[in-house]
Image 1 (tube, chains in turn green, brown):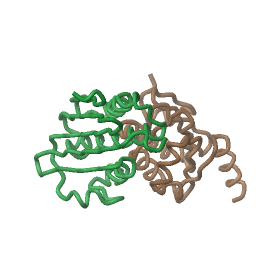
Image 2 (tube, rainbow over the protein chains, first blue to last red):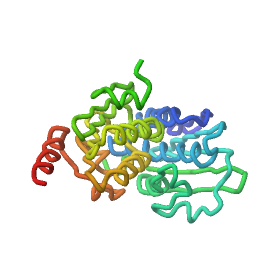
Image 3 (cartoon, each protein chain N blue to C red):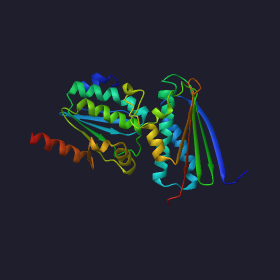
Image 4 (cartoon, chains in turn cyan, orange):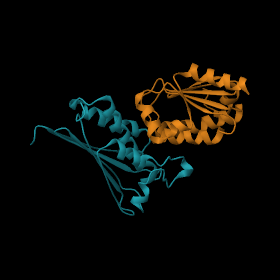
Length: 144
Length: 134
């Protein structure tokens, strides 16, 4: 096993109080790479957006399980957030800035834009009724 | 316990929740977040804020970020929604935002809709000056 790698996986309920739990866990996981405050803030925002999407869109407020996997390889962080919810009909449209399928809930339509802006890579896999997986990568410490 | 939203908005000028504090003074509402502003807190505050706006005839709102360092797109949604509700009568002020929150305001373009102030006192001063000028 590569001594510069590390990983964890947790599964939690799709409850909004777990949004802060998820982002704090990921932030704590990266601390040994000595990230800047800005990098921590970027990662926390991206995780928060991904987990909120599972709760609001994937499960539409219903009960469900969200899985969060993180991996560190040298200085690269990979985050995978998965739900078994309704899935996304049109991923391209969902990722357009300011587009939201739920304006009545005052969603700003900026979730995917923030994930894209704050992480180096963003990949979304989804299918109707087969859930959604968001995979994001970010190199930590490249600007230090 | 003062958990009845409308009753609270009706009678009290300052209400402290675990995650946020709000104060009403004349037609000005100051909301100080204590917990990070995400979807969870936005949902918790939205109804309370709207009740206070309606019951007390609030015209200007100051969001005080001086105690927190985190906001995501749910915070943007919350502020935009309140902007739509009050923009004909008054303005939204964002006070005490640190680097991280300022960056979110900038990327979302929200800084163009709100008045950015260094702290609550500065925002309150701007509101009073604006009213006097009318």
